[in-house]
Image 1 (spheres, rainbow, N blue to C red):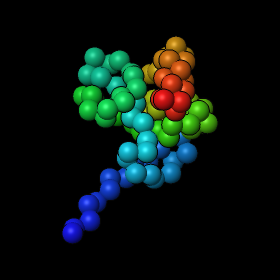
Image 2 (tube, helix red, strand yellow):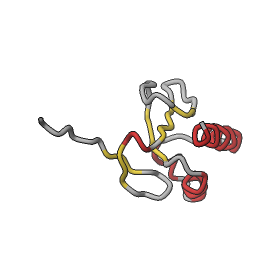
Image 3 (cartoon, rainbow, N blue to C red):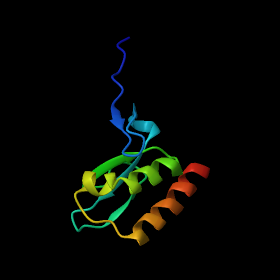
Image 4 (cartoon, rainbow, N blue to C red):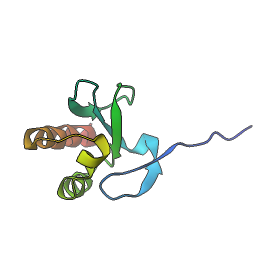
Length: 91
């Protein structure tokens, strides 16, 4: 049986390359709204992050999400992402 190729993505926090299924996708919609994409199918520009609060802190500190998504991200959006990340990690 042929072995399937596992898509790899880099976390914007720790910069480690991991299988796509282990990471969460954060997407900037065509309208400019930034949100967590749980299914990985939302349209727009995406960035991947580990389901870990430390990675989100690093990404925020070094403005890596802003660079990846090519947009400014408000503190409120980061707070919402932190809550959603905690929910996704727990559930």
